[in-house]
Length: 299
Image (cartoon, rainbow, N blue to C red; front, top):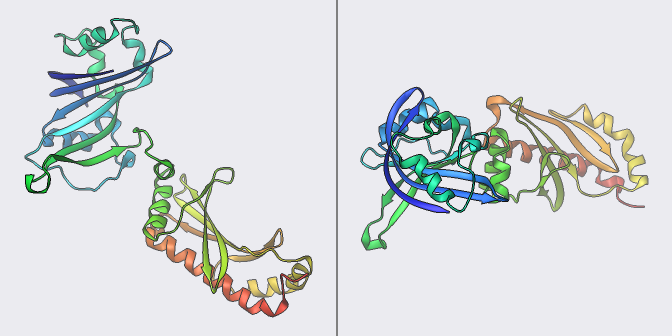
């Protein structure tokens, strides 16, 4: 259910009292229980900026998606969609035939019957935006400009992967920017992409480590070596490994792999991720070229 409102309400934000404009109330009931409750508030840009600075409604910098790092325009109001945290649903009236009216009363009656619901700590910021007017000469209407947070619903699989953490977000953005299709292997917790060098395919696995702000990369030639090929190459692997500038060469299940490429902290950018993948593929392809005379895939 969705209820349009036009109500001035006083909220306790970071220990301060602020009057905000309540525009909309949205609620869902599943199996006779509240499953979602959100409201849309409107405020001046200076208030929204203070809320960002002090992380009102749990709106911390690390939770902001699609963040453009620019201030809101001073002459347009800011709208905020916030969602009640589930542990506070018991403060709501029991869902019933008149639940809509009872729920509305919580927000429009003065003084509020449940003042604890007007504290920023019991809500999560879902999205913040301004509505830019579009010139009538190009169709008119408005355009939303703002950002969502990690508390919002996933829009698609790519959105879900970006929200795994800041490292995953950089990986996804790097692959998208470079036009590389994204694949996520859940059981191994790695991103997997295939790159090519001289018509040879190389499977690249990128493992994000959100806790240490790092990634580990390994690259594998997709061709399966024959048993004879593995036997021929075994004596060459150790020698070739000592020539590498980075990583280590191994044979895993009949495939040649370049392992242990690691990036940490500030060195992880969209550019360095792509450069690392390309350098690793080039390094492994160079070794495969050296060994091509060994006829590794023959029976």
